[in-house]
Length: 469
Ligand SMILES: O=c1ccn([C@@H]2O[C@H](COP(=O)(O)OP(=O)(O)O[C@H]3OC[C@@H](O)[C@H](O)[C@H]3O)[C@@H](O)[C@H]2O)c(=O)[nH]1
Ligand SMILES: [O-]c1cc(O)cc2[o+]c(-c3ccc(O)cc3)c(O[C@@H]3O[C@H](CO)[C@@H](O)[C@H](O)[C@H]3O)cc12
Image (cartoon, rainbow, N blue to C red):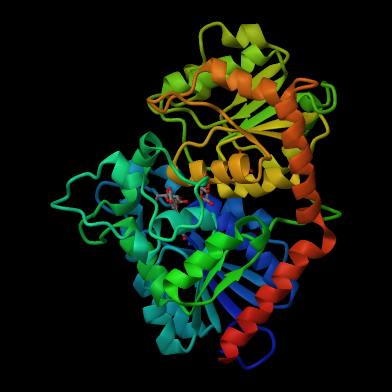
């Protein structure tokens, strides 16, 4: 680890990063590490062994960013060998948090050995307790939208749970006092997906308790967002916690001159189609479409658009490959114009391909930024609370995307998917023109050369001041 860890002795800071064990989070922490390494700061990045191969290629500064693998203990109830939440069904996520808590002694040893100036974390709410004694300042870095934190993870959102009784959907949907938006909210049936937030688990309490502790005990809260899109939510969070909220801006990887190129199998396949004609669909790094019927509605909706499409999705629950989940006769019908792939594709590069004109996304926060920076039309199929809020931000506040309609049972149909895609892709569609125009405006603001750099420079200054304080 060389001379990592100066505890403020030079202008270059040493920073330890320990993100939540999920690719969406690790990727965002690594993008931020790249930005800080670009300014000469040293990073020690903790992550589980199995994640290393996927995350390592994103490291643009191997001389300044060092990976240190952490052993994730086997916790009863978790699938054997589980290390990230890609390995764990959603309802068992709390057990992964239990496993992460058990890494505390190992992290404490690393801290004592390295004595960094700063520690960045999001889920490991005990970090401040072990960082303070070694003189490190702590930053709780949130990779999700400020809106989703403001709605559920502030002290005013505390709920009384009586004897483990599940809360009613109406109760879950109620925004906390002073919440600054009437558009970025959830309908009652959507709010049911928030019940995990306040549910208590033996030994670790609730997700709410963990996040509020993480933000109460840090020296500063950081959020991967910008004032232009989420200023009022950031101010609300700052006032709820009475502490500084530093914004990093979008933190997207820059176009490197020698960056890796899109895998030839996708580049060649996409090149067969007209510019802007292909619909790309991906739902992030976690298995999200649980139900085989919804998976099939998605496929059939894309088929019905008549457009070429590339889908990169994990198989739904109950099957081990996407092929097993496809509707009958589907592959034969769409051969030559539609592909459903169960593996990982290079999403930012696919979005950048000239043939791709529409992105059907689950609206994870990483995907939201990537799609905003692209010139694709955007169709949103959010699955969980946080993604639904991101979708509301994009569709209702920014008016840059169209959200697929769902019935009262929360399900979408092939028809609603087809309609949403056609509404943004058909020539002369008023809705399509409106979102294209608004998206273009935002893309210009966000991709202005000084925009992201301005955020990172200000963020770096915030950190320097914090370390000196
Ligand atoms: O096939 C794929 C799928 C995904 N990806 C990448 O994986 C990342 C996925 O991140 P997202 O934030 O969109 O979505 P995830 O569902 O994985 O993340 C989850 O945790 C982090 C939160 O900020 C998200 O809101 C939450 O949904 C994106 O950067 C995307 O480009 C690929 O490169 N290829
Ligand atoms: O679904 C969510 C709804 C909501 O209003 C807020 C959140 O916040 C977070 C979050 C995560 C990390 C932070 O530092 C702050 C907030 C959510 O994170 C997701 O939680 C899932 C369940 O534990 C987890 O599987 C996923 O990896 C996280 O991204 C969700 C909501």
